[in-house]
Image (tube, rainbow, N blue to C red):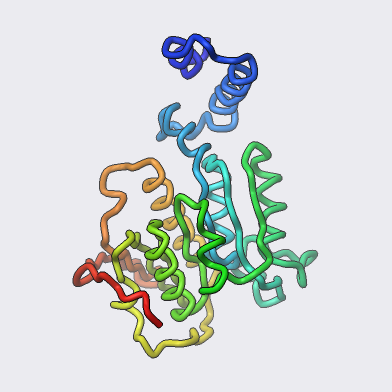
Length: 262
């Protein structure tokens, strides 16, 4: 009898046939699809299957984050982006192909995720998250991933997560450089690294490997948080430069209660 099923049957004699069938199906998934996820225990793999992650932005960062989390077995992904793919996205955005230019990014990533892992639920929202719809969009999320493209939007997302009491995994790239970090409810980390006057990002060249590196690091931090691994909620920001192969960490100055006004 599968390990997980044995444990459940020992603690609950009233396990239904439907529950038993689903557990056995999941055990087969672990032995097959997730056989190489050996860094996770059976219980952790099941825990991931019961979690919901909201990914804000489905471009360079969001594509890699969605890919990694779908392959890791996170049970539900909610993808939000009101933008469409264009030719300039082909150099770095995982979901962009020559055939889907003009198509919505969230909907295209949903198709890709479904081809990777049909056992998870993926919801595509072809819209931009903002202060008006944010509370409703985030209400069922266990974790939010920042894959947005401007300081103004990132600060807005941090505010929404603080109000909802949801952890946020932040990421950003520019050229050869990138940064990632975890922002727990109550922290105001992004206000320390982005000027309050910053409204829109200056569009700089970003190659595929920088987005892939930052997106993978964001996905790893998301999984650590979902599993409650030791040190997962550390407030350090990781900065990297792939041109000079430089990596360093910076801890924000302090916790900010953060005003929710304005």
